[in-house]
Image 1: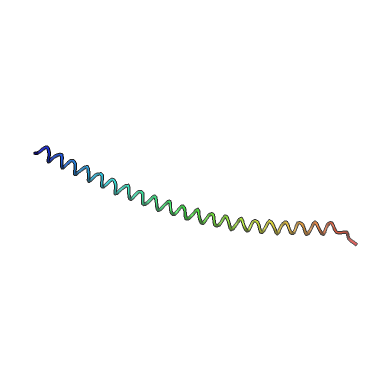
Image 2: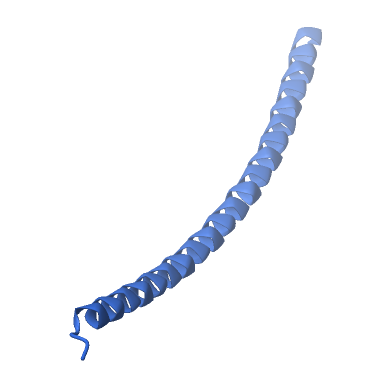
Length: 80
C-alpha cells in the first residue's frame, strides 16, 4: 500500500510539473506571437513608406525627363 501511495504522489508531482511547464511555454508562445505581429505591422508600415517614396521617385524622374526634353528641344531650334 505504501508503495502505491508513493507512486501516486510521484505521479501527481509529475503531472503538476507538466502543467507548470505547459503554462510557461504557453506564456512564451504568447510573447513570441505578440512580437511577431508587431514586426508584421512594422514591415507593413515600411512597405507603405517604400511604395509612397517609389511613386514620388517616379514623379520626380518624369519631371526631370520633361525638363531635359524641353531643354533639348530649345537647343535644337534654329535661332533667327
